[in-house]
Length: 207
Image 1 (spheres, one colour):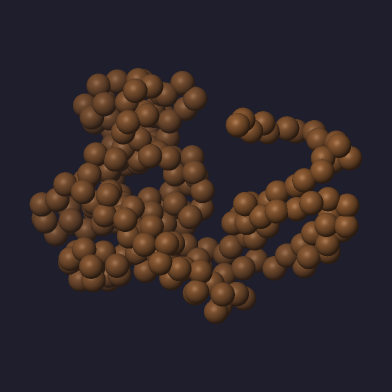
Image 2 (cartoon, one colour):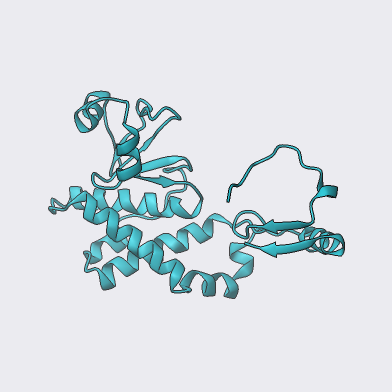
């Protein structure tokens, strides 16, 4: 099946309308990213045996990572990649340290990455949920650097991803949100009326 994005749609010709939930019907506050970051970090310390000092080293920084970045899974590098698979100058970070252009070339060989390399070794940071993952990855690597603890960036990348997935799949996040809705939800006062109006004439579903 193919999905097409349209800038103009005649809803009179549409019988069924589906909605994504997160960040479409519902908009979350940055407090949720704080929670995901903290709970994933706690999981890494308690179950993946990361140093307890990591718990007090840093906190989620909403100004550090943005949507649209990519992560090199083996090197633990974060950077911006354009549509032609070229690395944006000055965008490459290892831990909390920005790489120079010379260091970037040393890591990748050139600014242009092959399609095969992008497919196999890069992970996208596509949404607001993954910002906590990007921030935690950089902070964990920075902790190891500052404390002269040997580590493999690829292993840290995998562990952070595992911890973030645990927060989602264990329903830890969902239970927290449901018990503190005022803290995590931006109010959407007209949403219920809009959906009720749609359901009078259309079939609706939640993705």
